[in-house]
Length: 348
Ligand SMILES: [Zn+2]
Image (cartoon, helix red, strand yellow):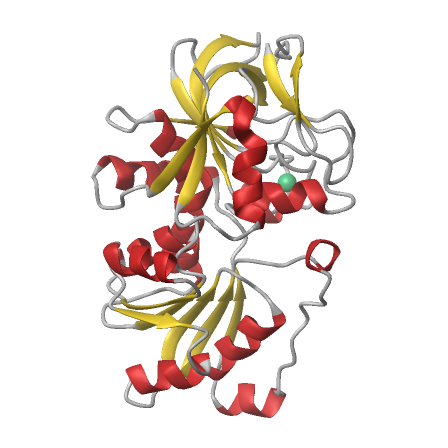
């Protein structure tokens, strides 16, 4: 089969002809039809310690058709259209058994890092990672839903707990995760203040439901939020960027009792800058602020996200697609921060 293969930390991917992988007893073999491309995979390739061995096939937002299953697989059948969960978990620890599988105490790494991913014609995944795609949801939409839409579902619903009328600031609103965060926060009843840099990203955020757009280059972010909220600030700040500057600005932009939700992270190994930020405990305490980390989603939440896409209450925003062999071109656009919305590979 054809695959785009990573041979070392941060290296460009190379097209190769490799054997179709064989499923173990608890695994599923999938013919890949689409694979999302985002900042997570670009950072993962360049961050020491994430990819466990080389050569490795990256890609973790997969959609395709099951072609074979292992002898112990019970709930997945050949011919089924499926997408996947990104984390390789134990399924047995306290957190896995209490619906907090992204906090697995015995994690085995990530798809596309600790096992081969979806930048290939076929992929093998554990049955536990499989999520069926409902009829009426396309392969590209399902692939993107498994991370770029599901992550906002968890962030808005479980961490920011966005409710009707809440002012929600989204930092990095025009990117692949951000543009779906805009839609999800609206769906939860929030008034969305979408912050980003660049006219195309802000225009996209407005198109997909932002009530206000904030160009972070035009004045201090927190001040712009205060102006748009009659001085009170945002009930929730969801930071998809996660730099020292955006996190510090996010805290300053919070209303009394507000929640800062960290989604994005800029690893020092990739960006060259320490993203740590300072918190004044007295300011935090007096204002009753909350700091949340939003760690991906459960497989059950991916299924719920796919249902939202099927109901057309969330629209996947895929602005460009590429064939498998052009994945480096797609990665380059992401490194240059030159993509609005999500991009995806379509694998014929
Ligand atoms: Zn576990």
